Structures are given as structure tokens and as C-alpha cells.
Image 1 (cartoon, rainbow, N blue to C red):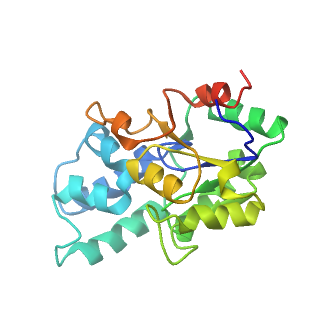
Image 2 (cartoon, rainbow, N blue to C red):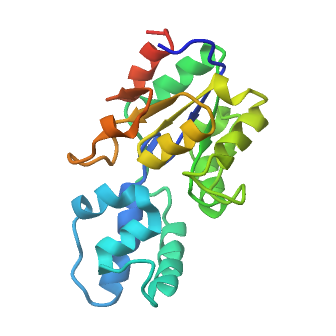
Length: 221
């Protein structure tokens, strides 16, 4: 149970929304445009949280060190930009969770490594985010997670001291960033986590297996 919490901050992809179908399709189009066989979404999904780096790794087996990576990344971005909300959905239970924390008087917002180029139109297109009081993108501050700067900026925008915010994310870098910002942290053990992910080794303050399990930690269940 968390005490004296005033705000809840969330990662975006893999925590609040399932964007894997559109991310995977954007990368897969790069393959089919080159006459390569399409790959199943099941191969892309576990890497969706890694964005362009993860999708290009699945599609072509390339890393950011490859000389072709920058050009492929921009192509991926264009593909994704054209289809960001075609098949992206809110995870089951998230809408209820957001409604409940809002009714209880908690402030809430999003801190993501996704750049504003995508975050702004995506969140504007989804009604879930109509009540969000802050949305911090990967390029809002000079640093992205696991650096604490984006989380500290979100707390500043909410006018809540960091120690009274909790941060919920589905990647170890989320927990690292939250701890560095002085926030209690919650590992979201759903979404894109594969069976090999060891959330117990992330040193989060709590782990949830479903979105609404967060209500128990906030003493709202």
C-alpha cells in the first residue's frame, strides 16, 4: 500500500495502450515493400516497447550501430505516423482504472519515451487521455528514461512533489527512472513482457498483473 500519494504517472506503450499491432505493421510494411515475407505480429509484440529500435531489429536483424539504421528508422517513423491508431487499443481495465483514480481526486499523467511527433496526435485521438493533466514525451526534456528528468518535469507540471507521485511502467528503465526521481514505482507485469522478463529483479516497490490491481495499492479496491 502506498501512503500520501497525490498523483499517478504512467508509461504509455505496453502500460496504458497496446500499440504493438500498429508498430509491427509499420515495420512489416518495410519488409513487404522490399519483397520480403511478412512476419507474424507475435514476433514483433515482445519488442514493441523498444520502438523503432525493436521493430527494425525484428524486421531486419539490424541494430542502431548499422549504417543503414537512420534511414530505416525514418522510413519506419513515416509508416507508423500514417497508421498510429488503426489497431491500437487501450488495455483491458485501463479505462476503469483512470476513471477511478480521477474520481478519487488523484492527478494523473503520462511519461513516455515516444517523441512528441507521435505522442501528441496519438493521445489527442484517444479519449482515454482527455483527463490527463500532463503528457511528457521522450523529447520534452533533454533526457529520456531511464534518466529521471522526464518524470521530474511531469511532477513539476502537476505541481506535486516527486515523492507523492507513483510511476507505473512495463520496462526496467521505467523503474530505474522512477527510483532516480524519488518516486515509488510499480512494475506492470502485463502488456509486452515476455515469459523471461524478471520484474522481481527490477527493484520496483510493487508489481501488478493487471491494471486495476493498482487500485489495491492506492487503497481504493
